[in-house]
Image 1 (cartoon, one colour):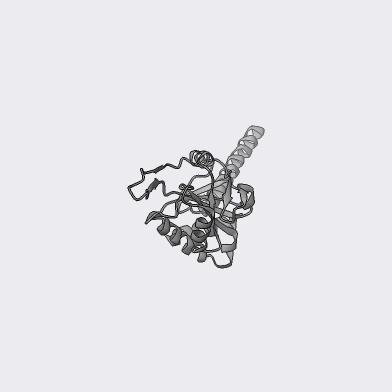
Image 2 (tube, one colour):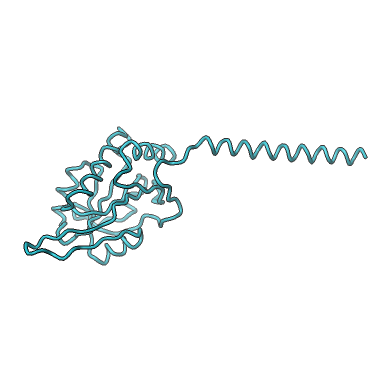
Length: 204
């Protein structure tokens, strides 16, 4: 009987100890609030590409390892969504202060015919040093847009040769290792984006 009671007491203490450990872990988990932006960790592929930048250099995702990367697709003649979104990202990154140097915003053109290297350089330079313009031929562009499920469509040129391009407005956020972490949109807001970028910078 004594052995049986001792075994029962030991078993009870074991279960209590396990419960305390579980509650402790749960408390630690709850102490970390979720990201404000949409969490896409594990839902998208790692950042991978080979394109030409605004200085006419061939670059790949490896050139940006060690930095937080924001990936956005657009075109320089976009009248509204692109400049609005890029201006928002500029403000969010600037609010990081010295940490802004650890963030890069990659602007991938969906209109490489008009967005030549000089055009891209003028465009991204106007937004700041954290911005990188990227372009490639249709084959490279289609491979990258398919990889991240980004849609775009070039309209038929008008009599003057001008055409617009419909495109997705998602902003993909990757951590320092190139893993996808967050998804932002054109209406996410400066403070929301800046807050999550600070958390990523602090955790890496």
